[in-house]
Length: 375
Ligand code: PMP
Image (cartoon, rainbow, N blue to C red):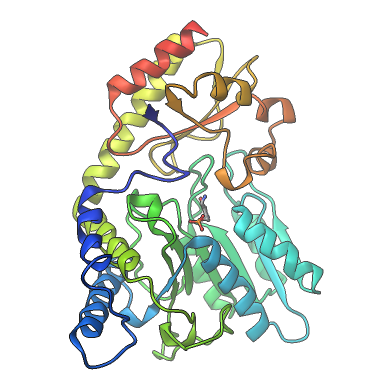
């Protein structure tokens, strides 16, 4: 099996598994317990992991809130901000190309009375400056926008867009799930006040991630109403006994990202260029790429095979290759992302996502191209 579905999830790194194992066996203490060594070891391990996650974003340790992953972080942030700061007229702007864990929350909030502006995206899946300016003028409580799109890799210039939000007193959240590990995510200031990520997208374990909730410029904690109430863990943002082994794995995966980021980015760029080139060599009349090749996450390629049906194609290849038609979280529906970029339903139905990891090889790409050219 050749795995080309790394935007859905990635293979766990053996160094991550090794770091986790002691916390599944002998180090089983609850980090919220006190005094005895099993508890303090667990707490120390959690704090060390928190430090590594904080380094990914250049943020403080108490700005990292462990959650079960980006779905939970997105829910917590969108619902929490609107409930805390929305007042009598809560309002929100999101792009039409967001992941379902943002779009479905927006729809839920809309049903409960919030005003939601669904921002149009361009042919690459990114929000254009004038669309963003129009959204700012409506002065919403929050703007939430993907850093990089999970289906096409399209990037939004979140750093500068977030600054515009700050100037107007609007909160900015970005879903950074797909960019971590592939691009430098260190943030220079606090304009991106909220951010979501999941460890399993960069060779960490599943079911663990974080919400980055930054303090204000005076260093005062940003309050939002929690999604889960209970024992007050994670500074009251997210109650529940911490999943220590998962957090340790998350921390290790973050540490590896920091050590290997440049190399990973380089490898992904080379593999992507090779894949695009070879597809054009073997199927010049059939292949059409969706979106731009420039401002994007390296390693995500969304491609139309003219005349093919994407479901049938990936099913036919599934003995040998793991491919997808788009997000695993909305895999039963034709991609809303590609539709928002202006593709027809027919074009969407012939589109396949090939998402690479640093451990894929050119030989694997050759095998895929060979099979595709024979179909
Ligand atoms: N946002 C984006 C952009 C994603 O790609 C995903 C995972 N497909 C999520 C959010 C949700 O992540 P998780 O399933 O780990 O909660």
